[in-house]
Length: 165
Image (cartoon, rainbow, N blue to C red; front, side, top):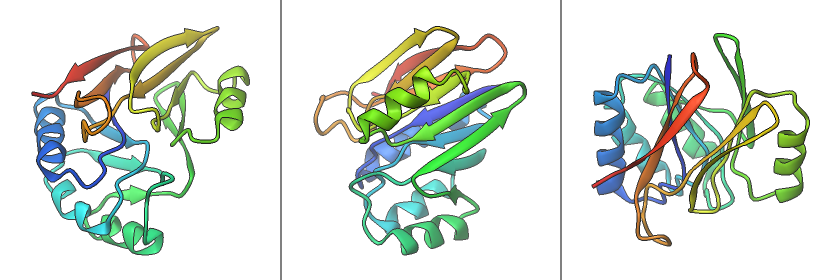
């Protein structure tokens, strides 16, 4: 199964639309969002997403209750600061990642086959023991100048970074 991964959209509507277009054409069955949507109005753009959606809150998200409500009205789920997703036999931890000690602890715990986070605005995929760690970078392209997402193939446990043009 293909899982789309995104983070740090920061109200950038044109890039959110490009990310959704890419995820829809990539036939992902689930999208994980590692936080920093920023404002609730972004939920309207995610209505076009054809797959299941699980997100967490980031450190820049305002109006958190309204953000959760607006996304739920679009059939998208924002769980809070942390989410656990089980996809087939793959157990995935999802968090924003600003709490570096917590992030490192989750990676070292060996309790998850994948740890997904954002916050750094830098795309990176690496392995720590049997855990794949995925930071998809930023959709907004505000800090790095690059708009990126990731796609994880749960059957091979391999992920790749995709540049959005």
